[in-house]
Amino acid sequence: MTGGSLSVVRDEPDCAGTDDLATAYVEVVRAVENWIEPRLPDLLGIGVDVAALTRKAADRAVDDLFALVQRDPAGMGSWEYVLDSYACFQAILAHRFTHGLLTCGQGDPRRRRTMARKLSEEAKVRTGVEIHPAATIGPRFVVDHGIGTVIGEDVTIGADCYVLQGVVLGALGIADNVAGRRHPRLGDRVQVGGFARVLGPISVGDDVTIGSHALVRADVPAGAQVVVLHQYQMVTGPRPITVYGVEALGEYRFRLHGTGLDRHGVEVDLLGPTHLPLASGDWSVLQGNAKCITVQISPRAHGLRSVAHIRLRHAGSEVTVGIPLAKRHRKGPIRHPASR
Image 1 (tube, one colour):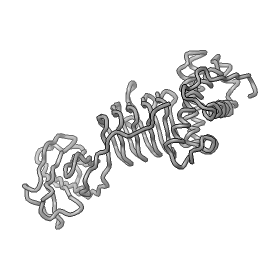
Image 2 (cartoon, helix red, strand yellow):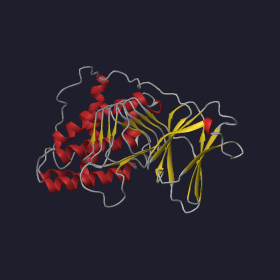
Image 3 (spheres, helix red, strand yellow):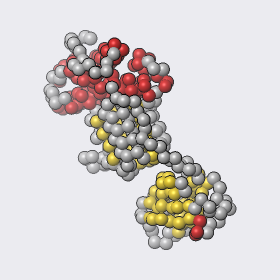
Image 4 (cartoon, one colour):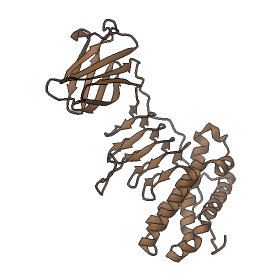
């Protein structure tokens, strides 16, 4: 590497290390060096220990690399293949360095912060994945596919998490968010499907699976699944009420999320195939407030087929949501091979 000499040796070889791991570590170090080389004079000018930062980044990144190889069949079991060809891994590699640079406490803090952000922006352009340098990410992290994934400034992610493309871990607001914690915290072994949005200062427990296209704005307990049911809405009137999501709580039990759901005079009906209301004995509203209504449907409800239509009416406005009736299968904690 030009502009400086970096002698990098892993301080503490993994206790289960092999020749393959040692070789991979050397190649990951080389990948970090190649990535930062254009910025090396600036990094040295800041007054940081570039060799130590490279070593620290590689220590974490080599474990991320092996996690991706192990968990993604498309990697063909080859760390060389993934390292050489996966842009999504390069995004993690870049973050391991930029996070270390931002938090190392050496040199000029303003220049260090600016350089970390510059490197992060360059990685975003090259990989399509945006990870703020300040985000705290645990070991063996995988971003698969990755295009459009955004991980915000004060996001915290636990160990062995797996995130797909288009995922947003961000704030609830668009502009003018208040300073302080505004992004989610994910526990260990959390999996997040493509295009899911996890927003706000919420906590997601260990062993949670968040399905594709889910919108999560409240705490999720450990071991739970968050699954989006494909829903169809028909809206008429000035819309004093809004439904923006449906959550499956169990077989034939659903929670509708929205706004204005507790307005005086809101009518809730379960509609049959002819879109006429079913008898009240076929369903019931278990609880409700301004932001959600929980509906229990009897599996013996007369005339129900594969889709239930729930209608909410108020002051000339009407929202009808079609929900596929499918059994909800809860999975246990995700099995993961023992960590090295």
